[in-house]
Image (cartoon, rainbow, N blue to C red; front, side, top):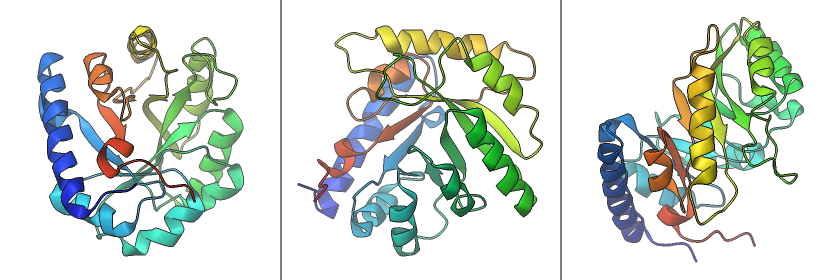
Length: 229
């Protein structure tokens, strides 16, 4: 059951404090960590309540849902697209979202290049890494990541500025540690501009920050459990 505006603000305050604590524990400043509100299935009234409380970044999972809700959001708040993306939906995002997180294959990057060129702009993206090699999740592997990065770097209208992952659920931090290693290694590749590691959601954002994440994607911990009906 989704919450009311007061509860959303209380959650925002609590989560912000936990993010700040984790940032300091990792040797960084609280402002070094981006707190994204993931808005899948969330009523725009609650999204606007989160914005009023201090949220400065939204994350959208579905193109059609975002299009139906975006005009109801407070103006001026940047939106990232974080969900699985079909090539035929890219045209709706270019020029309208700050960052596309879920670029997992060369063909998708090619379509982003094509559409960004039409708008004469550079679209910033993250490459998605399937750190747990899960068959049910998209993403390039750590082994194929360097070649994919090299290929996408050739596109003049696409800029890779980091990596994104959704680790498998575990009781320990094995995959968070593994992804941190991948990110640090990727930063050393030629012409790599690895500014962002998008890792950590409602269940593990604190641990993710301790392992190098600087962008956490929080949905249910902020807005309550999803209602998919």
